[in-house]
Image 1 (spheres, rainbow, N blue to C red):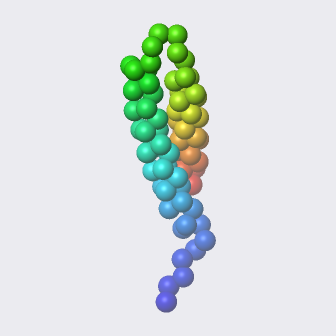
Image 2 (cartoon, rainbow, N blue to C red):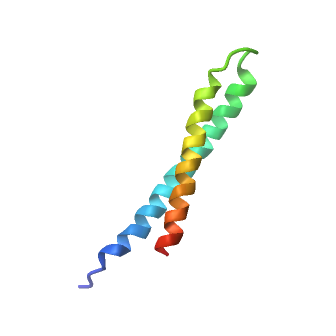
Amino acid sequence: MAVSAPFCSIPQRVVQLSEALQAQRERLQERLAEQIHSLPVGNETWLQTERELVAAERALHQLDGRCQLVI
């Protein structure tokens, strides 16, 4: 029975988080595009989606930076 070192699970968790953030970013990009194209002029409800998208992209960027430090 082989026992893996505790640090081996960190890269896998980083990969999982990265994949989840990338999927969220893609969904938010699609939603934002739809909102911008379908809303009447002056309706700015799409701004919340844009804020969420920016937050997801920042988190992904930070996670990628940490991943490179681990590797």
